[in-house]
Image (tube, rainbow, N blue to C red; front, top):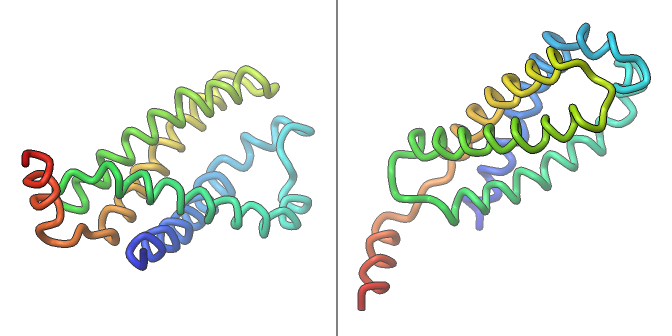
Length: 147
C-alpha cells in the first residue's frame, strides 16, 4: 500500500508541474480565446485546491490500475506502456467528449489531445519508476495459477 501511495503522490506532483507548464503557460492563450468556456487565471486560482484533490484521487485510482496490470518489466518500460494507453484513452474519450460538448475548435482539441498524451507518458513513467513489484511475486502468482 505504501508503494501505491508514494507513486500516486509523486504522480500528482509531476502532473501538477506538467499542467502548470503546458496547460497553465504554453496553452493558456489558446484557452483565453474561448471566454466563458475556460476559467481565467484569476478565477481559476480559487478552484486549485479542489482541482488538486481531484488529481490526487485520480492518481490513486490509476496507480491501482497500473499495479493490477503490471507485467513484471522494467518500471520505465511498464510506465510508458501504461501512460501510452492512458494517453490514448484520454485523447479518444475525454478530449473527444470535450470537443463534442464544449464550444472549442478542432485545433484546440487536437492540441489538448497531444498535450494529454505527453502528460500521461510523464505520469505513467513516474508511476512505473516509483511503484516496484515485490521481487518474485509475479513469478509466484504465475506458478500458483498453473497449479
